[in-house]
Structures are given as structure tokens and as C-alpha cells.
Length: 165
Image (cartoon, rainbow, N blue to C red; front, side, top):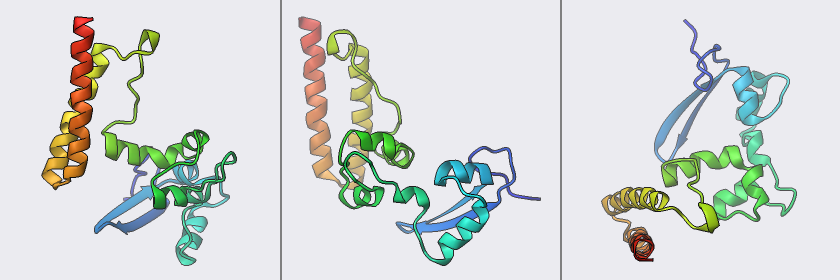
């Protein structure tokens, strides 16, 4: 019985990765189509994966460069900073897992009419910050906990100000 692609969950996996990062081993099984979507267009994804592993090259998507500022994804990984607003579009697929890990979701709660957040949006943000605060305290990350607490206080004040104003 063949392994099914973890991304589309439809086709048989033809490319199999096992990666160890941060003490955790992760296996990734992809079909050719999903591999091409994730890592770029190649004639034979299985051969490309083999060659990347053989020569210990990073995945092709890691070599993307923002045409506006010249930033590479590897630079972002080293510094944690993007070079310009265009970087968000260029590195979108690479950034989504980081955004999910940090914020718990990959969608944006935007501003309402007049450029102000609605009370509902503020309460959603407050709930998210509370979860992040609890996580930071559990990890012993008191600097992040302090920053999160300040953000929560500002949001609570904004909610109070909106109710009074």
C-alpha cells in the first residue's frame, strides 16, 4: 500500500522527506504536483528532491529573492525581519507556517469603518493575546509575557474608551 500525499490527500506520495529540526523529526510525503506547488516547477520532482538531498542544497523556494529589496528567505530566517512590504507576497508560502506558529492563525482581523477596530475584533484579539500570555508564562518567557500584558492593557483601555465615548 502506497503512502498518500500529506498535502492534497488524494495522490500517491512520490517525494518523501525526513527532516530533523529543533530536536523534532518530521516526515513529509508529497506527490509530484504538491511538491511542485510547494518547492517550484521542475520536470521531475522526485529527481530534484534526490539531488537537493545529495548536494545538501536548500529547497528551491528558500532561494527566492524579493525583486524590490533583494531580501532572501534565508536572510529573514537569520534576522527575523523582512526587507519591505513586497517580501510578504514573495515569501507568503514560506511565512505562513511561522505566522501560524506565532499567532495561532493565518488570517488578519482588519480594521472596520473609519480605520478603527470594532469591539468584536478587539475582544478576539484580547482572547488571542491571553492565550499567548499563558503560553509565554508556561515557557518562562517573561519578556514576551510583559509585552503581551501591555498589549492587553492597551486593548482593554480601547474597549473601555469605546464604551464611554
